[in-house]
Amino acid sequence: MSKKNIAIVTTGGTIAAHHPNQTHLGDYVVEQSAHDLIAAVPGLTDLATLTLHEVSHIDSRNMSFAIQHRLIQTVQQLVDQDTVDGVVITHGTDTLEETALLLHWCIKSPKPVVVTGAMRPASALSADGPLNLYHAVLTACTEAAQGLGTLVLMNDQLFSARFVQKTHTSMPDAFGAPAAGALGLVSQGRVYIHHAPRPAFGKACALQLPATPHLPRVDLIYDYVDAPLALYQAAVDTGAQALVIAAVGNGSLSPSARAGALYAAEKGVLCVRASRIPNGPVAPSEQDKRYHTLPAYQFSALAARSLCALALAQSADRQQIHHYLQHY
Image 1 (cartoon, one colour):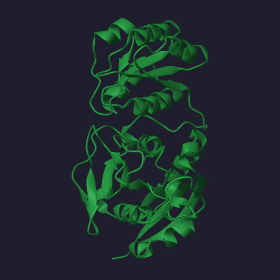
Image 2: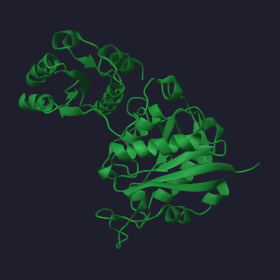
Image 3: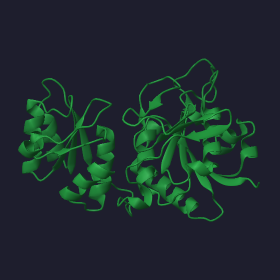
Image 4: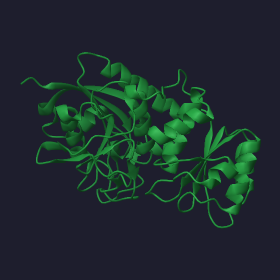
């Protein structure tokens, strides 16, 4: 059987980082090229015929929508080619979940798109990047990965980009999907897919990549005891087009959050009621009628911010955004 043609798109991140001390896992420099990454993984070129494409070379804490926009355009151009069977993206883990979610909605193709990275720099003892990259390419070559949207491969586990979250600051097992669990795993050279993601994505999703690399400003406000109303007023008064409140519990709004939501509504600014808790939905409640908020349903606060920004970029109204929160 002929080998698959897999495009590897690099953006930088810990997977491409180096530190002169092998036991030092921080304060590294992103310096490895795409060719360096491939050379560090024995047997990778036996899996597939690879082409290399560099979009950026940054620590992902420096990620911007301009770079994400260029990345999504690059990936769409690649999957549109008959000669490309799948795409693997290397990305820093700090903002990986945000980039992967945008890819999940904006890439309009059933071909596998797999995002991976590393929690330890390439120079570290027991670096996790090489095996993550090997497993990501293996997944992109697998027929079962077709039509699942964007996948995230970290530490042998496969997650849907719709639900993946970084759940630990430093461990190799740093990613999870508290709301949905893993889609599958890679073990002993085999890819196992347990179930498919249900919310709409790709061609079944109305969200599109904007023509220009700019998104409307959507601010995320973390609620807490005695949080000041001034946070909400400042966000609205300085140009936020929507607010996402990471509220306590099941999206319960504190006194300042309630006042802030009303202030936003008076100024015509959309307000989404999410939760600061990493797991569990925020269901509709009487609060939404009283304070003119939309519930986040199964969206984390961070994911709800991304959805609102993309939706507002294509002039979606309140009703449409409510629909997206329910079904995407």
